[in-house]
Image 1 (cartoon, helix red, strand yellow):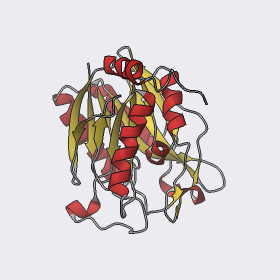
Image 2 (cartoon, helix red, strand yellow):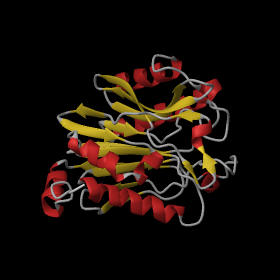
Image 3 (tube, one colour):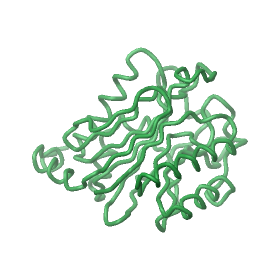
Length: 264
């Protein structure tokens, strides 16, 4: 069993202030026995502000500070940040640090949808990523990636039994329903646990944000390989603590045949 914490928070504009959220979240999660602590996409700085000025490499001050927190508490921390790219753009990066890891997954599928063009300011990644902790293989994906089942199947093919999915989901009619059904569908497609950690809904705490930016709706959730929702948060900031049994992934794949019976 792997104990994992999903810290559903509201990131602000200031990376230094957001580091405090990370420290506090890790400290509380470790006190409850977590081995991995997951924060949302854009944990470094929320969407709706210029991203290039806050972007830093993985050996920069922000990622290094998160790495120090992970090392101090002997956990893996997964948190969304922004790293430099070309032509004035950044990369939407998941920092994975601790447990012998310090690396970044660059979001492959960019959110050019619902009237928003992430590709105007963000350059896409190109490669899926997994990492191992305590004998369990974890895949990672970011927000809009959840609409693409082939990525989750590729992670399962690479050995993942669990996929960690930080997000900063855009609000709007039907968007909560899409978030929930997509996370559950990707769990069924791949036979993986999907642990979807979103930004909290700013409206739930009275935070003013750019209304055109995808700044979160809350409702983080955990689905097993059968698509069953094991835990779910509400709209406001909250931490979900879940015990994940990787053996359920093998059971789900055997039962559904969703990977073995592929023809395309």
